[in-house]
Structure formats: C-alpha cells, structure tokens
Length: 598
Image (cartoon, rainbow, N blue to C red):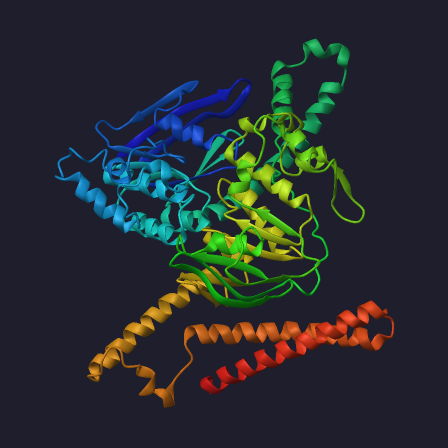
C-alpha cells in the first residue's frame, strides 16, 4: 500500500537547483534513510513533504486519511509551556482516553520527570526528547524525521533504534548516524548532483551498491569522453561546410560535451592540518574532586594521560562529562586536587558553546582573518585564509557570505576550521558530529585516526567513537569514573556480558538456596574464569606492552648512539624511567590475569 507518491519534484533557489524531477514512492513498512552532503536540500525536501515549504514543480500526494508525524531538526515550541502540556498536545482529546497520562508515562521513560519545567529552561537534548514524545504519542502511520538523533544521548538513541526496529511504523528520515541507518532502515535514498538514487537495503548494502554505481559511471564517462573526441574531430573538419552537416550529429556533440563535464570526485572537506609537537608529559590528574552541592562529579580522581591517547567520554546526561572538560581546561576550579599540564600541550577546544562565539554580522572570510591571515600547514606549506577555507568547502562566493546566513553544517565546518587552523596538539571535541554530513564525518574521522596528538571526544555517535577512541572514560555518576579499555561497541558488549553473568550468578545462587547478596565467586573460587572485561583487558595490555617496549628500545638506541645532545639525553633518561615503571605495572597485572586464565 502506497502512503506517499512524489512525482517529478523540482526545487531551486534563484539559479541554484537543489533537486530536479525527483520521483519516489513511499510504501507501508518502508524505513527510508536519506543520505546527501550538507547544502543539497535534505531539510528543504522534508519541509516540502510536511507542507512547510513550497516547490517549483511536481506533485506530492499522500494517501487519503493517513496520519503523518513530523519531527523537525529544531522543533518549535512555546518557551513558557511546560513539558507535559507540550508532549500531550496532540493526544488530549483522542480516542485513547487520557492523553496526559500517556504523555506522563512516555516522558518518564525518556527520563523527563519534572513535568512542570518550562520548555524554554530545558537543554537541547531535553526539548528534543519532549518533541519526540509528542510525535510518537500522535501515533503516526508515516513518520518524517529530520536528524532525530541530534542532541540525544546514546542510551536514548539506542532506545529509539530498538523502538523503530520493533514497530511497523513507516519512516522517512534524514540522519548522519550510520549505525542507526544500518539497523533501522530497509531502504536508502541518496541525493547526488540534483538527482535521486534508491537502494533497497540497509546502509551497509547502500555503500556497496553506491561504489558499484560510481564504477559504472566512471566507465560510462570514459566511453563518453572517447565518443566526444571522435565527434570533436568530426565537428572540426571542413568548418566552411558546417551548415550542411547533419543536425543530429551536432546535437549529439553538444549532449556528449555536457555529459563529459560530470565530476565524480567527492566534494569533501580536506583536513591536512598538522599538529604542533607534543612532548611526553601530557597531564596528570592528582586527587581531583568536584561537587555541586550534594552532586559529586569527581571524587579523588587520579590519572596520568599518555602521549597520543584518544579517549571517548560517555555517560548519562548530568553525570559531569562537560564539567570534566572544563576542569581540565581550567575553565572551572576543582574543589580539591588539580591537573599538572605539560609545557608543550596546546589545546584545541570544539564546544557547543563555541558555536555561538561568532559575530553574526561578519563575513566568513573576515572571521577567519581575525585569527590569522596565513595558516602554516606544515614546514613547507603556508595557505592564505581564503585558501585554507577552500579546504573546508567554502568557495570564494561562500566566503563572502555573512555568518548569520550559513546553514548549521556550514557553521560547524567554519568552527572546525577556526579550531584546527591554530595547529593544536590536544583536541577536545564536545559533540562534534551534530549537523555534519556523513562525507565530512568520514574525513574528520580519518584525520583524527592519524592525528599526531591527543584527543578527548564527547559524542553520541557510536560509529564515530568506535573509529576514533582507544578507551573510554565512563561517567557512572556520584563521582565514579570507570576507565574502560576498548571502543564503545566493545564496552556495550561487555556491559551486556556482565549483565548476563550477573543473572546467571543469581540463578546459581537461587538454585543453591543462597541469598542474592552472597558473592557467588566464594563458592566457585577454585574454578573462577576470566570475565569478558578481563579478557579484553589482557588483549589491551599485550598490545600496550608491545608499544611500550618498542619505545623503550628506541630510547635505549638513542642513548647508546652518542649523537644526542645534553637536553635530549636528559629528556630520554627521564622518559625511560617512566617507561620502566609503567611496563613493570602492566606486566604485573598481565601476570595476575594469566594466572586466573591458566
């Protein structure tokens, strides 16, 4: 059964065509993800379907009587209306009875329990959850979503993911969350150079078929160019007789010429900015404590950060992730303890608050020139501010735009440019993935993977975390921070395994008539096996020891070479002492785990 029919839809702004003659059928049970770079009109497309924007030509037809829900990227709301009233707006008088009770139940499930809080006093994540509750309570048959995962924490994203996987609801959505696309969607449509391409499968299937399409287009383009050369030779022969030449040959030449100008190269951000040198001492946290009233953020936290570490920070909202970053950067004072920062550390901070620091009245190029007229890329390469901006997809025309006219994705690219142009060696990224398209995300990920410095990233994008981080700081609340050795997917698997082991232990305890609180391991101590987490820790320890021992050999070779100056010898001697101490600690822990595993 068809829910929505789109026929030859065209939309342009002035002489710029966003999409042309786009046709698409949305059928019952479809879960469609829309993929495209920023600026090609994804949100405009959804707004047209929702009746919020007009279009140039074409036809949009919904099935008669169908209930359609629309979750906007930034849902509008009355700042004085409270959460409960807003969420229950569409269900108060429906056939289900008391819509307010239904809204209260769903908001509680979404961790919104202060129902009287005005929407204007809520965070972006909270308002998004309330808006999501409202649209779900309206029980739409077709749900249109614009970036539904933006501003949601990971637990909420996974809840939504599982909900859509179970429900028979029909979806049409724009999202950059690749795991979400892969698990939820059964169809992907891509906007490319004004045209629409449809793929019947999930995101992984789409990537495979898209690559095949580009290979076919490349082969076709090569044939077109060969034909164009032949036609060009024909057009150039006997120019005095051109008027008598066959019209179809001339028309064919112009058609081939137009087709030969197709550019299959991706328009991607180019991140080749080099980091500054970073020494072996990064930072050491010594008994750091921070509280707000009765709420503990850190409680005597100690940690020594190593060179080239890449750490992800995860945890529920309100557990202190952003506060931790501000403590590290010196933007907030600790209650007790402190951070000993290395002299070579040069911060690069990408924050949600930083997005508002731009002077909206300035042009893009002027905002960048205020920071630097020339950007040093490496020892041999210097770029002007304008040349540097072009690497972030800002054309000369776009560079003259006023900042207040930029889209959300363009503002984030500009902000990223201003952070990286200072050549930091320690990047702290707070939710960097919001509003960035998938192509830009992939380039940013590649840059961070090869970044010769340190990274701390707070993100709800699980794919992003899995590609970037070596380990996680898991904020559990009440001042507890757990250091987990591995990426986010491994962590979630570990949590699931621990939960399974806990349930199994409870079953064994119940079977043996023991109390639930009695530690099962005391009865089974002689046959204890490694937990999943301990097995993962062993793998990480083995990898770290290989790296540490390699570094130790390099320093020993330097010390015995006789070529190092006094300063280098002093630094190397200090570092090798640190290495020996770290290696001893890790080897001791590895032996403990190997004894359990034997």
